[in-house]
Image 1 (cartoon, chains in turn green, purple):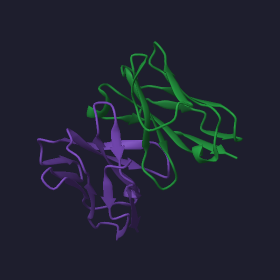
Image 2: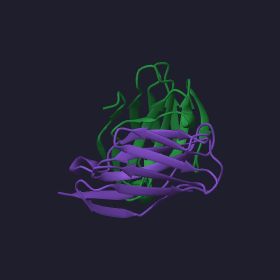
Image 3: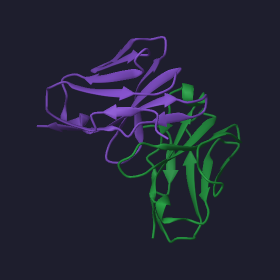
Length: 113
Length: 110
């Protein structure tokens, strides 16, 4: 068990709505990365936050946005939901980004109808 | 885009046998990591191997890295039912981004 928690566990939304997912990082970790994982696929990198600043982004549109707070917890916001946004959303905390072990939360399963 | 590609896509073996999974990648890396995922939940880190290392061990796990062939393998010895999971490799595209393969689904039959 990692010390990373995510909420909610499951979420059902309709197309066009907005959603906020939350992540609490492991104690002492100042870096949080968000991933989208479609069924049967590997995780796709959305973006990374380091000390409250976005310091890297994958190939996702601007309607995917995020925040990191002074306690290093983080939010992922998705606007104008589309059916293809249905996926497992994972956050991972670490000390040094991609060069370091990633500690994952259990994920949030988002279903868009 | 997916840099790492695991092979095979699925593997079914008897409990007690060894399981070998392979990962190929396309561009140069600083490190390669292996993770396990049970039933579509969070991923669990197994091993990180750096580009200047050729082999690492952790318990029943053995990882090799061949940077000349841009490939890595994960060997699980004496498999157990609890090893049933999907296994992913991830490589560092940059100092912030990991690129993941589609995974190998491992089933251990009792």
